[in-house]
Image (cartoon, rainbow, N blue to C red; front, side):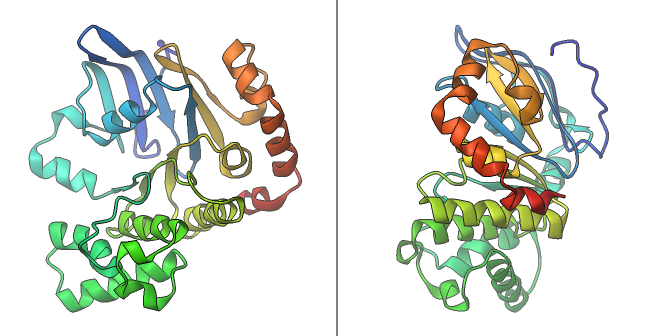
Length: 272
């Protein structure tokens, strides 16, 4: 994909061109290209050590690439002033693994953190907005006053998602959103992501190993192999790619079972 020509506009919230990231002599990404269209849910998969988290941090601006350019909503990250960078970051929400909630704050206070940092809203309004976000992600009213330690794993994920949505972003990054959840909780979280995409017009990039999520909610799947994105396409196209790793990943019994479950309808009907 090194010669790919991308449309760098607001209709493509994420475009990465020629990305190189390295730690000393260890090159993690080389000439990596990635494009995500507005309104898509794109899953990023890859083997252990391929640099999925490094890629996420690079797209978020937490790590500067050694070469190449990351465009968010058509704007190159590396050419922004601090004020412009902050304005751009306010259009982006992130759910880290486990929710990454502050243990010393209540759930409501956690959701209010981005508002306190990046807005001048009255505290009363911030509380009301935080409660609205918690309701949006399906948490009961009493959860607002609980500590994160009082929540189940699934509820912590939802609270973290509410915080990610605090500033009404259009672009949402999810890092292993269903990891650690039981099958029922994972399916409910997948449905929540679909519902939020439809209700809020979100564009979603998710790093995941969850085959059920890939088959049931992702419009496209980007496979990170050999330091670059080997393919970024619909699962029908990805699963027919001859690359041995891709064939092993998507040709195993667990993947076949996920494909059968996904093709029964279920959540896929929500995407139509």
